[in-house]
Amino acid sequence: MSTTTNVTFHNYIDGQWKASVSGSTFENRNPANTDDLIGLFPDSTSSEAAAIHAARRAYDTWRLVPAPKRAELLFRAAQLLVERKEQLACDMTREMGKVLDETRGDVQEAIDMTYFIAGEGRRMYGQTVPSELPDKYAMSVRQPLGVCAIITPWNFPMAIPSWKIIPALVCGNTVVFKPSELTPLSGLNFVRVLEEAGIPPGVVNMVTGGPAVGELLTTHPDISVVSFTGSTAVGRLVNQNAAPSFKKVHLEMGGKNCIIVLDDANLELALEGCLWGGFGTTGQRCTAASRVIVHDKVHDQFVQRFVARARALRVGDGSRPETQVGPSISEKQLDKVMGYVRIGREEGATLACGGRRLTDGAFAHGHFHEPTIFTNVRPAMRIAREEIFGPVVSVLKCASLDEAIAIGNDVMYGLSASLYTQDVNRAFRAMREMNTGIFYVNAPTIGAEVHLPFGGTKATGNGHREAGTAALDVFSEWKSIYIDFSGKLQRAQIDNQ
Ligand code: NAD
Figure 1: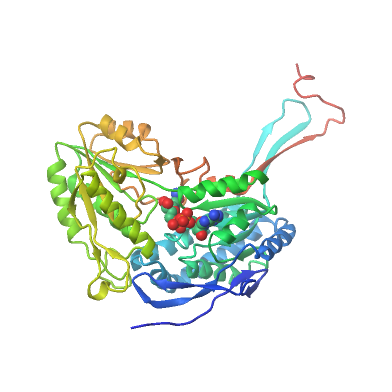
Figure 2: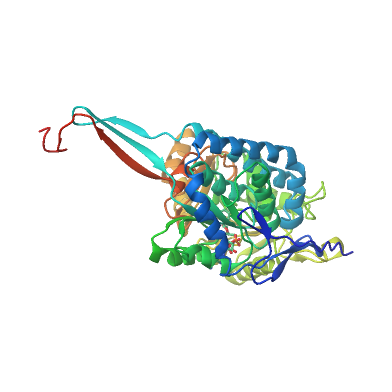
């Protein structure tokens, strides 16, 4: 049954909801049932520069609002998110597909981040240090940078925008936000909350659309910061496009994360972690545990139980309470998953369970795929090296912790890793040796909390971190200030020798 609603949504520019300059739109459909048209959104293009101009004008006044006052508006926004959590989660499940418990978690993450970062409005600590010269003060303060372009993916449609927009605002920047074209409603819901919380016109602007408007935001001379989360391929392009105008570029990109299960692990605990890490969010997390590296002493036993548990996972519409694994976000994403299942077979891995698209009955109009496990996977295989972003887990064997660490590190990405062991010495060795931005012991690769830095090494990131107070480093820059009250010229490094 079609549940077409035909709602047309708009961009948000300078405090006004407006159609795109071209007037063209794109559709947003429910990935569990593509007959369900959620609405039409502006297909913005390079003609949407008005959003950047509005943000540039608003910057002149917003940057001068005291940070604690800016934060008061953000606290109000957090409260509105709390009040609307259930409706926001339902909207998110409808457009993104993940199960309601997870979309509630996504909204909760936005709430946590907004409260946490709003608190920075009264801190944003700088340094005061003794001067090397008499009668002189030395200190540093954080300065905003200007207009920030915020470009986000679809898998955390409210949490990720909040990780970027809220710290940008508390630091005194203004924002032009482009949500993923696959989840524009959650982006828009977040902006509505900011509008209702009293964020002044022009301070936050939103333009929906795809690469064309993304390119405008990464090349326009009035943009000072680009904060991007998405694939490594697009991140590279964003970096290249932003380089000629020397924008500050913050990139959070792909992952190929692993869970290491050693021979002394609590296997039941490891099993729970691998199921949640591998198949939570249908494997569509940047931190998904798409590789499980198991010690050969427990390998067969572990695999047997892992496969049995994966087979029993209930796939379905994320809005139904019994569902554990929702659909892939799109037909394109599902094609990618099926492509990798084919590649895994051709490479000689053993398909231990799953491997098929689900099309019968309730699955007929959605992008559903069975939870899939490959065993006998070797580190050189593409399924063990490339990000699939779907419900596909590769199991590899190791004979020691050292071998597991070598396999774990031997990929281009470096986001998250985890180790299951009862041995504290092995835990600390792995903690030091895994070249990732995030590491877990006796917990899966997912589960980051908002008050610690989040991000990855190698092709996952470009050295910045979001979340925690590290987020402030992306959205501010230091100004060092010296005040000489000696009344005479004092030459540093010379007059004090
Ligand atoms: P994507 O790279 O296809 O798109 C990300 C965003 O970039 C979207 O808003 C898209 O419209 C925009 N975009 C596309 N082309 C552009 C261009 N030429 N210029 C500017 N913007 C452009 O990624 P996706 O499919 O939305 O998300 C999945 C990817 O995101 C995965 O690789 C996943 O690992 C990654 N991800 C990483 C993190 C992290 O924190 N490291 C978190 C979530 C997702």
